[in-house]
Image (cartoon, rainbow, N blue to C red):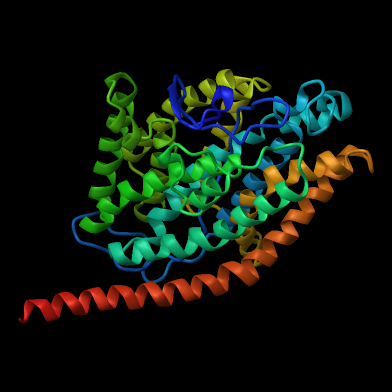
Length: 417
């Protein structure tokens, strides 16, 4: 799912998957998109029958390394958007006014690969979602996703809209009706543009959740998750050549194999390695490297396939180490706080950050400005987590639990009539 030429609000299919436009720049259109990932949660200790015995008993320790990888990926994405895209390297661009490669060449060349943080987030999402919902009911899974995704997202939509109103000239603000629809997080399915282009990843995540809920409803086991990976992978391979839009929409071929890699890695973590899991991971790498190449060719234009595949391969090897317990000694508590800032940072940094750079680019050294903007958004992200996400999530959970209890009681009452 990537930026589409011409600023069209309707996603179109290309060699690299669905293409979702960013809000158009004031001086021209643009292609790119970035990412989101999920919060690490403690997995339940229950073990279902019919699968290999899980390693260890009781509650499994938190994987602090995952939090570290998530914040690193978020920072990669942020630096890329502010100083490493094809857009910011064009003469006369609305953000820096001249090519970033002329202003800070070393930063630009490193930042050109930051977009790979998107794929890193997708892999982590597959790992964490499988871990956090093991032993949960579909109702618990649904509630956990709603309270995790929406509070910070609602704030980000309103915050970004406010910044674009206060700092015009870089991005065109959407119409009020489109902004309101963005609050549902379903705007892409309705053919409406995102308030901030980075929201495109949420559409990919939502489709993954809907598919995986089927497995959650059936009861998660080693066997069922493996079958799910194989069936979803086959559908993702067939979808682009099927000329069947619904299959392509559901199968999510542009993101499926990254999520599948995360699922396989979690099964390695929980049950230990075997040839089948290594085969799924190898297939995910082979399919993923092709998607990375498509993104380089169609969207990024500023980085190389070889460099992208090298970074992604190193990341997968690190994740294998995490899954095999090699990072269990990492117990740095500050990583938990850093991990909580990842989602708000990703939601807020791009459109608002580039608008601010447009106004402040002549006030200080460009490298210092990039650092200052990112640090500012990190502080804001912590505040959003502390004073928006946590209290609103508690209210939502209480309300949803009450609503589901009422549904359950209404059903029981009806059965006794």
